[in-house]
Image 1 (cartoon, rainbow, N blue to C red):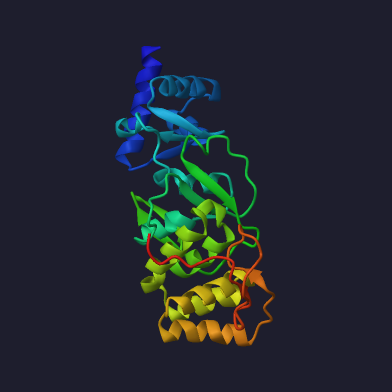
Image 2: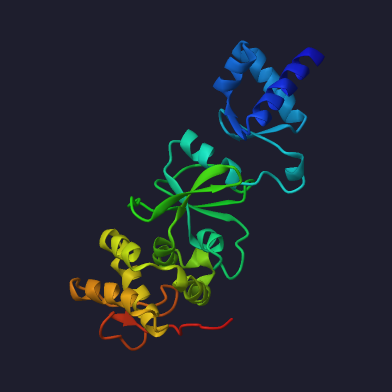
Length: 265
């Protein structure tokens, strides 16, 4: 048993020296030059010693001593996990806003947008909050080096639109107002144009146009939104999806003003 334990610890040391955080069972078998049964026994011993943790069937993460009290940090293992599960993703919503310095209240979980429904029983253990966006985007995503790994984040322009799609998960309408206000300096005209031309939900664009008009946003941004409005039919939609559909209707954005835009906490 001591021999197997030493082999296991050597595997951990090799991975750590390479700056690795995750590895698969198949990779472990090759590195250990061992049969599957023996490799699984070694990995089982490492799990009991709290040197590794199972992320999903067949994929493990190294467990750093600094994480043993609160659990594995999700960011360093997220990209490898999603690639292993063959699930396109991006860090979005309040977690993306937090990355850009505008979350207002730091989210307690890492909010991740995925392309399809995925059963992942360890999401809670990893402090991951998964949200499905059926029409997964090709625009408005960027790879960011963080904690040693490349992680995909939504751009500020996609983030502000996505917030409206997931109002309940983002602390409600009041919090969305404050986050968007803080993200305004990050929005770029050309980026916004690319996003809204491909964005599948016109209601989010209408709400953003209404809100940016209220905040007296820069003219270049408003020009992009006004041009979009002049070329698209716009059904009447509620400013807040969680409140009764009552209030005045804005003539340009066709937004039912059923909520008050918050400017200060």
